[in-house]
View 1 (cartoon, rainbow, N blue to C red):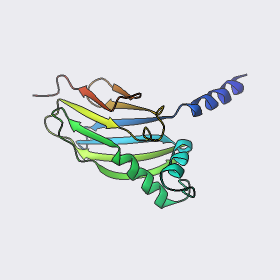
View 2 (cartoon, rainbow, N blue to C red):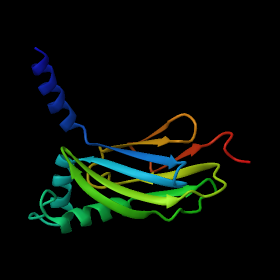
View 3 (cartoon, rainbow, N blue to C red):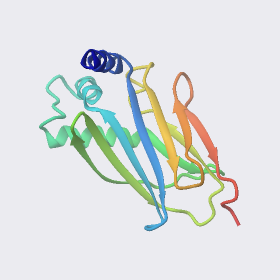
Length: 161
């Protein structure tokens, strides 16, 4: 019985195009680390539409690199005043059913909040939902990029001097 439920849930999950991003304030490195997690299944479809029909995200490093760059071009972080934080791409990897893209930037000394834009795959599929969690600044804060939400903000209370 349980097995049946699991297989139904997986079918369900595939119809919903969704990505999860974690923005982690790492106290040890004093960096802001960004981890994007895409369903490999979605990434496979995306590269065929973005690049060409032969694009192979499973086995081709160039395609993986190109997809990672596509993601980073459609993701941006600004401080509360709207000044962009320069994110470096640290790398990317496939792991099981997921494709990960990693970015990071040095944590600005005074940060009252973030303005975040996350359009990856939303230009291909309007129904794509990108969920983003901000961790390491008090309570976890969750943003959902869906519908026509393009720029969302989080504020940090008690973290400025």
